[in-house]
Length: 519
Image (cartoon, rainbow, N blue to C red):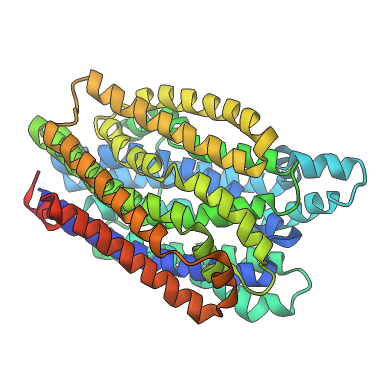
């Protein structure tokens, strides 16, 4: 089982790596084009709202509820009954998302006022910042239909994942990045409003992602004619699981939207600085955390359906160890190398040295919570695979309310950095509650070998930090170098950190490649 999981995880990570690299290229191009000014703030704002709803209707709550039910149908029902489920799910979900999308496009001024309260207040008072509200309303009308495309893309991806075809859905986000890069390179430079041009790039990217999945569904004989099925037994089961999961899996997204709301009252650039640092956080989170969570959910669902309690525990243990092994060095690397990474990736064009300085603070704050974010991606499937979506909701409510409290506490003295600190602290609380729940239910408990593994990984990560700090050039040196000089120095530091971490593991008797042989 572990060998199969490792292979699936490597496939997803490889495809995700391509997507994340292109995502970084996209952000580099956007930073060069718009920096952290008004246009950037508006574009990132208008992109967050459909992405938040995507977590609800697409790969978030829906996937967590749909995959276990689909797995159960494929294990215990006929192929025709499974196809009937797909027909009813696609038709029901499709109609609901179509209605939501139309409402979102029409009501874009209301959404802009709701989530960009600071800009709306400025607009009411005829202040200069009020122009952001008007612009955000227009841009949101263009980006919102992305929700419709990505919902069906996520539905197709969930179907393919349950059949072991992980590479397709992991590779699909590449097309969104390519579309935005093309818009930024070929059309935006000659546009008076580049943020609107980039919004059309988002629209086209969503359409391409949707079309890309269709041939693979045909090959799997899973392309069906949608039909309404609100009362179909499978749909009833999915929506019963999905309704509480809507809140549970979107807690982090609600927190980010709340951050955006508060940031709209702060200085210009706050939303952009948080966005750029969050994007760097998303790179290792997607590459490791989401990839591992994606491959263990179908495996855990099969363990539960077939009453394989021992296999369930081993799969969970494998996921936690994989997260610790990869997440610890990634977290420490983000914190130590925050400024160098921002300099290499974004410091050109409209993105200034001051932007690097400001974004580095929020990146370090976000980075401190990376391991918690990753653990949530692995611990939550322990509930969803058993079709328990209510328990994570309770923990999600606690984490969200706590995050709002932290926001109010830390935003006053630390501004936008306080928002990042609050998000990381609430993620730690969420991960702790998820593990505590699994432990109390007797579903999963960290074994002694896994705890020893974690301690050894922490010692190795500490060694890596010491080595990086010892060889880290001063800020004046980074500023003196041109792009290629900075890039070479950063790559050397990353390689040095990887070597130091690996040596630390090997000296303590940990062989990372042994993960493929079981736990």
